[in-house]
Image (cartoon, rainbow, N blue to C red; front, side):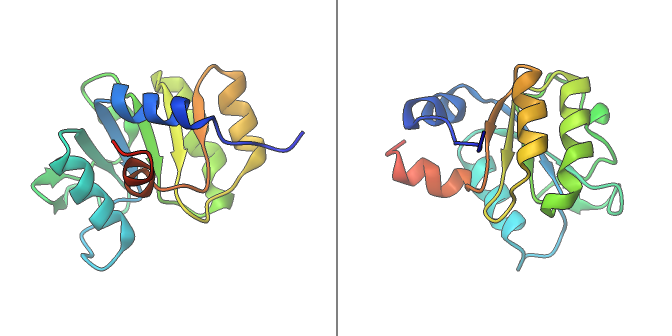
Length: 140
């Protein structure tokens, strides 16, 4: 069965109830979409933890980039994925391991198998969407 994103009220609920976000694929390049999304999330009160093993220890927007979601010292509500679709399955597995509540795959990121695995483990999944766009579209 093909994946369908949750209804608008569920997506709005995810955005309203999320406090802690692991941003997978974060980096210091101000011209990458992840930089702008992180800025938006931080400015809207989310507790954002950038995660990228190849940039671990670097600082982006005042936050130290972590090597792994397991390094985040608090429970994770959302895992926001800025990785190519082929690299999503291990991100989802790690999200399940650390007890995240939702996985959000950014625009252009689609992995139906990983989405099914996450949903099967009880996580909410949003795929091929951007939380910044959804925030505005839903009037939050």
